[in-house]
Length: 507
Image (cartoon, rainbow, N blue to C red):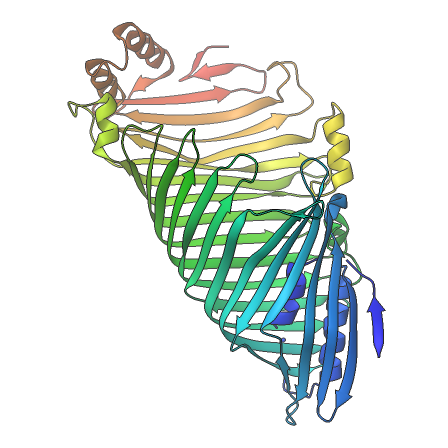
């Protein structure tokens, strides 16, 4: 029997084909295959295949999955020769895939040319079992390895020799549960390690070459999602409006990388290393959250433009962002934080501007933690609204409140800390030259500032006249604190537009 279903995405297909759902009822091969079709159809794929039943085994062959890329950027397809779904006789189904599954992505290049990229998705010792019932399936899977490798690139029908690229995950194990109803609820776990990648690519026009390799000792993912039916993944705004949501976390242990950029102008090579890290992604109709962090990071770089190798290290490097994605009548929460903790650099770098070691070599730290409320005046993930906003002079949003939860800067023996809280009047754009009028207070504390100025003068970085001007400004905006070389400042903006520094009006 041959069939064709229309729908609209490529990672989703590999997910359903090599991941998986669990209950204690019976499930049949036909029900598993039907579930795959509905899942892929809901994501916007067209699916072509033939199926035949022999004994306890359903054979699905000549499978082709195709999807149109967003914004007319081409299409992607996956071809599988044969998938076997075997009834185990105990209410579960065993799934077998071919060891090699080719993928083809046809897109549009930067100059409008048609570009075809061919990939090969390979597995070794892959096993999958499905249990549950038609509305609640759990897929348990494992593999000795999974590899995605670049096998070819064509531009306008002509082969382009650009090199090789591949990624391999070893010792793979995972579980995926899918519960279908008005929505499709997905619960996933995945682990692998080590995970490695290699890249050897040459620019066919310019001749530059990029070599890179690296990986992670172990990788783990845990996540959940809610998928609305019959809405293609190319329309994210519609998916969110229909109830789409996701929340997932990747973690890794011991990440390493090496890279080498070979070209005539500025060759460069280097390496990175980190002990562990996380990547958090969450999205629903109200908010988008992104968080990334790495611990014990080391970076080494050398190249033609550098007089010597550059060595950098930091205990923590982290970024965390949360904000609204949809237009709303009421202000919505947002937050952003950046952390660079215990940053150090090699003595060779210090020696460029401080060979006499006047400045303390204490690790530097920068922390900025903000939160607040804002009103978004368009849907952030709607391409048509984004384009209309870019072509107009309309304001994309309104800032209603901003809180500085933490400002910490420790550098060369000095420390600046601060916290503050402001609200904004978007009806008053005159008091502060087009900016919504703020009202609130900012408290700042500087320890070691004058000592740092003296040292910067001593090593010749800061001229005496500029330092004198800076001391005068600190005298106007700050007051002496209780400790040695300590300055405190309270900046207040009142409802009538006055700006006060420690009670003294400066505007």
